Image (cartoon, rainbow, N blue to C red; front, top):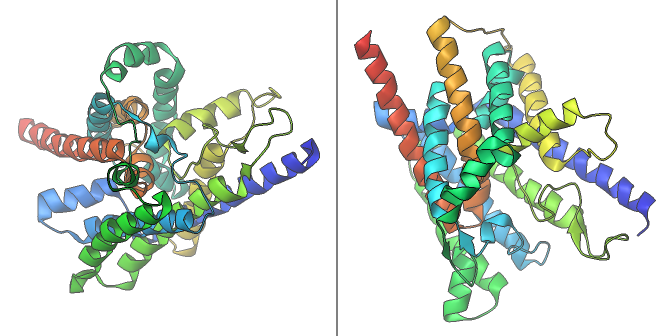
Length: 370
């Protein structure tokens, strides 16, 4: 494959990622998919409908991810989630900070992008603040703090940080087969749990769960199959085109928000290439915008008052810092990370849920104080 063919394939990867993200944004806007809303419904009303939608999406994504691995389409061990080093304190603390922030900012990273596409100007502000704080935590002053504190606390899993890799090292067998069996058990259980509730089984909920789960699977296919080059003509090494890590990636939004701002600011720099993450950010906004126009739900929205502005700014900052520290958001560590059956992702999601509950308690404290 020569450079011209490589550039052509890269363009195909970016357009495919954009198309998948458009579908994600449209479905999320149509079904009101929201992790913060799911946690809020459970904590405040005892309603599990949106949490079942979230669980259904994870179950579908898990089965799809390991089914592709079993078919030989992708290498399921070649993701950052399979790292043998589990930085558990970063995942827990970063997740909690992200969860707390998403409550203050009226939604997580994906919800912020969906709301931007639906006309929310305050979500646009959240996007910029979240992107800048994420960038500072990736490679700025906050990165120095993160690397020298939280990231130092870790433990090693020599076989790899996912359940199938650990099971393969313990019981033996083919890694692809063990992965598919584990996915069918864990993912299938989530699907059964979600669909077992009669009230949950409506078109909107099923569309949200299965549709968004399939977009995660589709992005794994784009980065792991379509973008895979066995031998790069310059490095002579295998690579995954248009990815930030050089490995398989799926939907995630915290770090890509920072990369989006970087791409916009340094657009004229020839070395600043468009990546799958940036295409995903743009795609979600476009998908939500198209769906909101189709559903006649597009409306401009601004901040209510000074306190509302302050809370959203603080929440955006917490999400940017927390999302990078935890190596992902409710989609990056939630839907995408959990689909790999990663221990680190599970720890991060526990932190996100705990932080969200803390955020709700803080909001109640503010109301009582007033």
